[in-house]
Length: 125
Image (tube, rainbow, N blue to C red):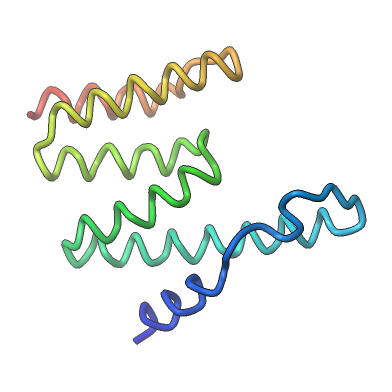
């Protein structure tokens, strides 16, 4: 029932507060609301993963990924789901896109932990 409540709450979150406006006075509130929304989505995704509902989990993780594209923990969760589903092509594609985006926008490589996870998952497929 908690997941249903969280799903209901998340469905009320349409978009970030004052999305197209840059009001300095509300930045902390905007960040607070977005952080809580993302944490709820993570909780829902983790529940779905534990229950084996990988498509539902992936739906939530993709919402988070759009809002926070450089979150390596989310990327790792997505990689794990692709590995569980034995989807080698999406595992590779997802990681390559993540690496490229990180490099193009921030000039950095993924964390060693992320690269190691990718290699481990790939070798098991």
